[in-house]
Amino acid sequence: MSTTDRSLAPDRTDWTTVRSDFPFLERRIDGQPVIYLDSANTSQKPRQVIDAMSTFMATGYAPINRSAYRMAGEATDAYENARRAVARFVNAPSADEIIFTKNATESINLVATAWGRQNLGEGDVVVLTHMEHHANIVPWHMLAAERGIELRWVPLTADGQLDLTDLDRLLDGAKMFSFTAMSNVLGTLPPVEHLCTAAHAAGAVAFVDACQFVPHNATDVQAWGADLVAFSSHKMCGPSGIGLLWGRMELLDSMPPFIGGGNMIDDVRLDGFTTAPVPAKYEAGTPPIVEAIGLGAAVEYLEAIGMDEVRRHEMELTRYALDTLVGRYGHDITIHGPTNLEVRGGVLSFAFRDIHPHDVSQVLDERNICVRAGHHCAKPLMRLLGANATARASFYLYNTTDDVDALADALDGATDIFGL
Amino acid sequence: MAGLEDLYREIILDHYRSPRNRGELPTPPAVRAEGHNPLCGDEITVFIDVDDSEGEGVVRDVKVSGQGCSISQSSASMMSQAVIGKSVPEVLAVVKRFKGMMSLDTGNDDDTGADEPTIGTGGDGAEHPLGDLEALQGVVKFPVRIKCATLAWNTLLEALDQ
Ligand SMILES: Cc1ncc(COP(=O)(O)O)c(C=O)c1O
Image (tube, rainbow over all chains, first blue to last red; front, side, top):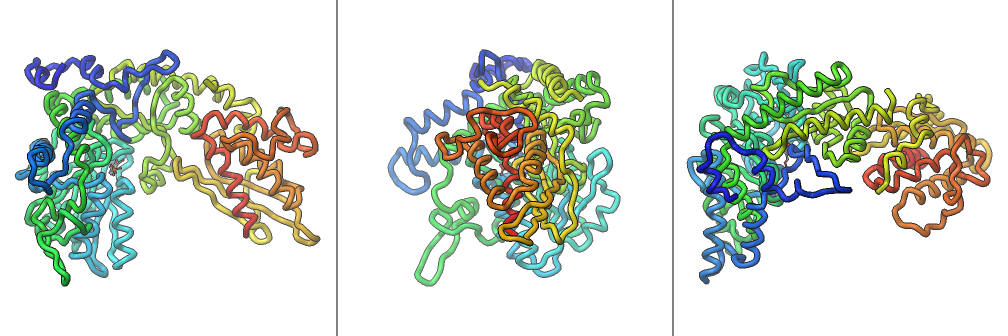
């Protein structure tokens, strides 16, 4: 089934067909299917993306922005089409405001470095939250070490939401408020629009780490009122190796470049250089061309299904998973994060009896069930939860209630071995 | 395919449920070292008290604290048993043998203890120098868990370095 067919389909999506778009999920190990519950880590890829990339590599591959021959022009168009697709997907006012990076981590480092060095000095304040991924912590720590900025942290409530009681005081005098739109550990969906408004009221720049949000929800960066938004292709059915930064043009224009080299310049002389206009200014060197083509195909794939449909499907799965796991295991399972599904995405970090998450995931692996066990690159949050590690099951559009049932059944196996 | 029973041997689960030599030692005279498994967040602290009064030094006591999975915890427990009372060169030899057992490539120089696994208290050092530790052999079939099994040992080496 092609993506165009699907856009004509009635509004209830056939999720079995969606699942069959993903070759990885057809894999059998020892005759048993693979149950992939690690999409918050990285997502599987539909055939449409794989085909777009291999076709482009086979017959369309050429340099972009550099050569005058026709094939190079076609490749440049394909690359720029991907930029337009991403802009449309997150409702950016202009495709030129979409910058291709290596991953979301690089997007955040770009901002911390380019914007940070221009705007932050000794004693300046950057506000983060207690549920950030290391990608949105370490670059700011590095800046703190380099120039003595102060980091402040928005705390959490007992059920894993942001505690906004003191937000205005925390933001007072801040120059930057950088926060996640969805926690990769708790699934929490903070009120992004409200946070952007609060940042602006304090005169701070609002930077959203939307790495977990964009793959699972309809995104509108303008409705958010954000200044900068970072996300990654590999979590949204696209390939690894390409990430995204959206920013308001005025801001991107005023920031200095990040990485220097070819493609990002207007002119180079013996005594200096001038930069190319945005987005080229931030895309030094040969970019991830094939990856951009794949990302463009991923965006079209998700658009054809509709992000509201994806969100609805994942809410149903999450509700089913919470009911099933708690119904079956009661107090033996602790699922972290909010129980109100309006403010939670399809990420379930859990503790099961007293069994270490590594051992839980080992037992699940025996049944080809892929979950993540560890600190999820969010050690400050883990300390708050009082756990070194959790097991985490996360859902995407290709998961079904059968996957949840398999997870619930397999957990019994852990009890058998550890006899607790 | 290796089954879970290769990994979770009874002796491993026993050490996991009732870890030996848990706790801390006063420093000094003991030294401490911390080990992290960056993949999973497991943290372990090894305390080692070496009696240096004569010659090469003898391990008087070892204690282990921290949190981890069944493999890292049981390995730490067995490690503590295997090294208490040994001289430093003997300890280094056990570490070498253990790491040899945990390495994916075969044909190392430490086949001696591995060909005839002993399950039980073992540990007098002569014929089966690795004793209970040989139960951890199955871990090699689960490569992602090797780091769990070696965490306590690398931390021990760090402590010995001090
Ligand atoms: C919330 C959040 N931010 C940032 C990142 C980093 O993304 P990437 O690894 O693609 O750079 C992740 C990935 O796990 C994430 O979950």
